[in-house]
Image 1 (cartoon, rainbow, N blue to C red):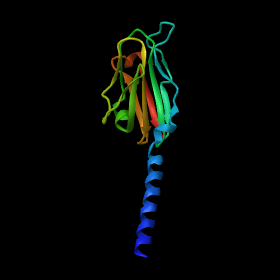
Image 2 (cartoon, rainbow, N blue to C red):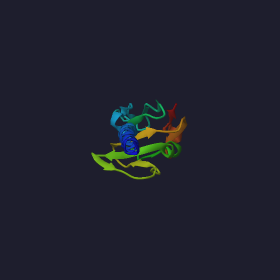
Image 3 (tube, one colour):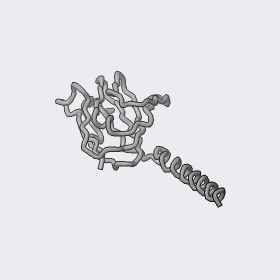
Image 4 (cartoon, rainbow, N blue to C red):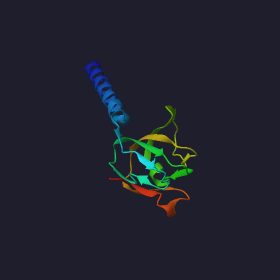
Length: 144
């Protein structure tokens, strides 16, 4: 009887481990958010498209931050970066993986940087293009 109980326990542990592994990989079902666009094609370097974005805690997302203007954009969102689980940063189909949040993302030229993450802590997190806040280069990433 003892052997049957041990086999049943091992079988249950295996099922739980398999179920947990599938449940933990939230990134496979990520949602693409609208692009957060800095500047535009018409020459307005200080335009912002989708400055305020709302997300749900516990869900996986991809956010593309796109620079279209001719400014140097330093994208800061320190609290937001601190309260997400960052899966990867993608630049030109090259992936950056790491254990901690970035300080900021910088665009010296037009281009895009995608971040793939799971939203963790609810709150309203401000972002800014540092040095260009007075020009309206700010917004909010809200996690509900």
